[in-house]
Length: 422
Image (cartoon, rainbow, N blue to C red):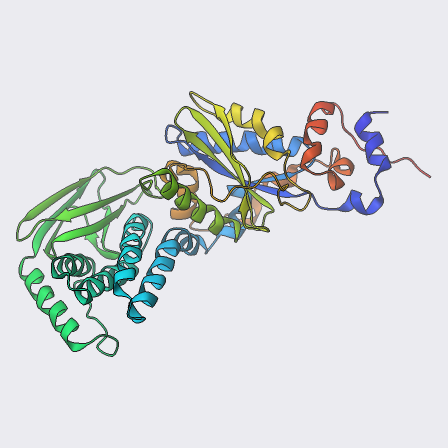
């Protein structure tokens, strides 16, 4: 009798029926791969996970019911969420009469929220951060820094005024005086794109289709998004001059989740926010994240149950890294418990410092979701439902540490669970 079949006979009946832990495979952060190449690599990784008989994989197509209607919520939670947390801390310090301590926190908030504009549909949080930073500088007697912060706030939301019930009249008067000056220095912004009928958003507000000439654009950093009728995108942070003209020629391409932050820790926090947001909503036990850092492929797992990451695994990889990822799966999963958490020596505080914008397959799923359901007769069975019950008995109770055993003992012609009559 085959060794896996014998193992299946030795397991108790409740274990035979236990569901296998699920792993979401959502693409690789590797900029050289197109979305289609990332999808193929992810499918190969998912098939290898399924073939282990200890886990069930889910790719983005399988996860669409969990994503549908939640795409912008995921993006806002992932990218605006960290900036909002910093903003709340800075607001608390300012309201507690600690403006000097609020300044560095609010400065960090503006940096995080500016990066988040790549996927955000509103600049409201960014205005809050800039205004509170200006208010903090103003309170501690640094008027030049206060002016610069107020000018950036006015650029992203020129019509918004501070709440008179929350801020002193002198502060509001100073802000309004600066706003009047900046509006008088407004410029003309011309936007073109390499596809006709491309729609343009400026600071989260739809403004028309290209070629587009926008007047009365307040000088400072403005955020331009473009979307073509064929689903191509562009995003650019544009610095508009005072009382002048600015031309932006957008090159449309695949959706992106934005630019990587500067520094390894900041990049890690970006990726951490993304996978935490995904993990809360995908309905799986683990999420696989991977991508290139320099000349290495880095793989890691996120556990929604424990809200933690596994230790990253780094493998040399010079080109497309799908095969390397498949080969590394046994080692990556060796430190995973049956409940989707990690062994005590397999924890990391943050995600690996991947390029958050290099996973174009995931970006397409979140930014360009399916517009309509396919007819019922045309729907395909989800990939994971075609997963066979080969070796389920062994898989039900043996955790990640037995992965290598299963991998070594199975092949395409083996692994059937045989149940003998009593």
